[in-house]
Amino acid sequence: MLFRRAWQRSRRASCLLDYLAYCRDLGRPLPLARRAELSDALPALHGRRFYLAQGLLAESGGDPPTQWGEVLREVCRCQQTWRSQFAAHVAQCRDQGICVVGNAPVMRGSRLGSFIDGQGLVMRFNRFYYDPSSAVDSGKKHDVWVRSPSLDRAPPAAVRWVVVSGPDVIFRLRNWGALADIVEQGVPVLTVPLEVWRALVKKLMAPPSAGLLSLAWLRQLLGSWQGVSAVGFSLGDSNCPVPRATRHHWAQEQALLRRWQADGLNLVSDAAKETEHG
Image 1 (cartoon, one colour):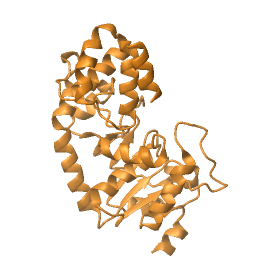
Image 2 (cartoon, rainbow, N blue to C red):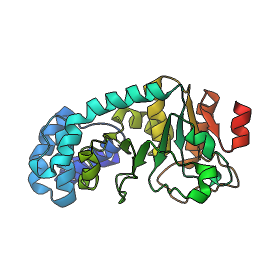
Image 3 (tube, one colour):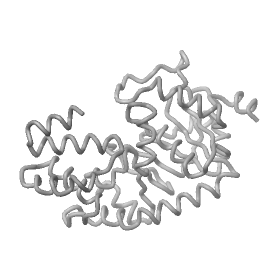
């Protein structure tokens, strides 16, 4: 309401974009009724703001500008096909198990490496680092690499899928060139559907972490938690401190994880608990 009021009072192009971008961050795409207004505002926008406005317009039905590069165009062309292929692959891996591996300190001493490497599909995040000395805890298998939009790191070797986290950032991410090599190698680069992000924002009243977003997407694709395990996630244990970052609502995320656990998500922190879960 405050973003909208600021725009209504000033009628500045920058305030209109701030209002529409904030709505988009909540998971609400650009309304068709605002498309003409934003298009008329383009000449008054510059730099990052101009790019953001172009993205909102392209997402609502326009064509990506030619200067955005071939990598983005390939990602746009193939996104629905890749998502369908990913959904089919996830379903095929369910019987062997799907493991989402978080980066919380709770992984130290967990002795879950064998359990992780025995799964049909393993998903890891951002700057995960495989150290042979810690393989007994974290394993080494990785099929899906989930990276934040701002991460400056090359994809891990032999990864089969790349997911860029966030509220469907196809038209928001500027540095698609960082993924050019892996796209050329035929590795699908996915973004998370906007409706998954929107549903979590409503529950958490905050942007979800990449781990929670990935779990929610898997739940949507599979229809239940059957076959899905999550390791390396903190439930607020005293030996696993809450991260200092304030962008996410960690207490709410931990409460949601507990609800998902009650609904059937296999959420474990060490090999002994996994054996008990059996």
